[in-house]
Amino acid sequence: MRDKLKSEFLESCGWSSALREAVPGDASTRSYERLTLGEKKAVLMNAPKADELPTEPEGADEALRRKLGYNAMARLAGPNAEAFVTIANELSIRGFSAPRIYGASLNDGFILLEDLGEDLYARVIENKLELEEALYQTAIDTLAAIYRSSFPEKFSYRDANWSVRTYDDLVMLTEVDLCLDWYAKDFGHDIPLPARAEWYDIWLEAFKIFKAHPYGLALRDYHAENLFWLPERQATARVGLIDFQDALFCHPAYDLVSFLEDARRDVSQELHEPLIERFCDKSGLAYDEKFRAAYAVMGAQRNSKVIGFPVRADLKFGKPQYRALIPRVRAHLNSNLRHPALKDLRNWYARHIPEILA
Image (tube, rainbow, N blue to C red):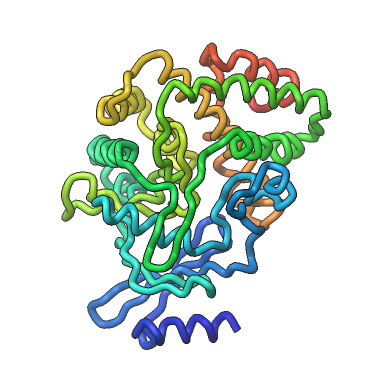
């Protein structure tokens, strides 16, 4: 049935006779195909709705989000193709290189979109390491430009609408629980309720630092394997963007941490501080102790989430290859935990999941 729907969609877009080649996917339920029709190229996104947990409905309170499960608690787009097309549209009209939408069947979960090519940041830098600094500077400038841009709460594309929400405490606590529920259990640690309560209290106190800076749009998965190098374009449009359907309004350090503390590749250490300073300069933010503390807390939050993700991907979805990311993520987390703002969290880890500090 899915194949039949796909064929009907491609026919409706005039791409039924295109050559189709599977593209390696990510850790989600989505799949992709690269299409070639003569001189034209496109990418087909296949995002079946039935393969995802429900997302947060409009007006849902925390109790309902908890009842609905992880997608609603973490404010993920899940099976909603509306999220991708509307965010892509809003980014595009502001001059950013999100893929153009050639066609969409949102109810069936099919999107035909622009092919941004094969020059992923990670691939380009692997072949020409001398380009790393210049490419990272351009991506930092793009990230700062996104932060400076104003966006509506409700994003739109033709008749589709999508509400972009805020990265609230429930999202952040839901994410760090991946560490307890998957990484800790992988070492045989079953965290008791009193220790969990202390864990939440420590995080909530640390999150207060985020109030020091205005929130902006965070694409939420900004890293070298989700960015394309498009040197023929100008300024910030030289960075091609994908995998932004889960975007939320968040502290500006989130995507910065995602980019510089990449789980998939080592970013040259000497670039870190100059790039953070460059981001602040381009964003109109003071590069001071408040921002450094916020960056450390956001790094600890994101890396505490990401360190649980490979175990979950292995045990729940049968994708053990992601376990190879754990040592790098653990190193990033240890670096975050050295900041004085995270002293209590580091002590908590030492008592309950000492393997984190290895």
